[in-house]
Amino acid sequence: MNPVHESTSCAVAACAEIIGAKWTALLVHDLSEGARRFTELEHSCAGISPRTLSERLRALEDEGLVLRRSYAESPPRVEYELTAKGDALLPIIEEMRRFGHAFLTDCA
Image (cartoon, rainbow, N blue to C red; front, top):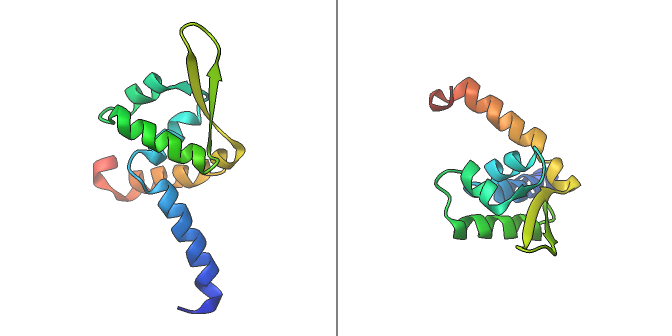
């Protein structure tokens, strides 16, 4: 590989690895509307298992894209919201949506 492109390819691959996991782009898109509870995210992503949702949220949190807030209430309340780093993904996800509508017949 040409060394000039090596760092760019690495950045593209790293970004694709983060948002390329099933459900991840949809979760980031859903969180763009504000803080959500686990069950709200579960309902907005019909077909996602609780285990997968938990894994994806944890991975997004580990990457610094999502913030998990726990509230000391009874019953306990936990909300997830995008960080500034997570917000930075939104233009990419919007372009993915546009591409899907323009070029993928199943999304029209």
